[in-house]
Length: 177
Image (cartoon, rainbow, N blue to C red):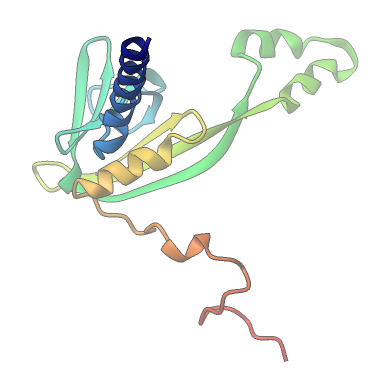
């Protein structure tokens, strides 16, 4: 009986140790993010859907086994933003416009939130280019952090004081008299 309880305790300890190993290794493997290339990459059609990933110091957009890479140290500015787009597709949206009494216009009120990632970079010749990507909400900031960690520059750095309470004193805050 005592032997069985020791085996059970040992199995439970091994189970929790196995769970703790990925948590303890501070480095996470970046996973590709579904994205839409709006405009800007050479050799990639506008509004092309693909996977966006940051690996080995490169921002990589993959579509149909074709890669388009931008070196992180060639990126002069990376900016994220939030936007919305129509939730109703193109075909249904166009057909619904024929609904009587303006009923089709009602469908254009339904919107879904998206994140945007804008990258300004220089190519091998030194020419300035820009690329815009859209992706699911909450993913653009992670890509920006990875790019900055691997050598990209940004004009809007992460503000470490943003998490502080609004009552904290800052030089830009207006004082009440």
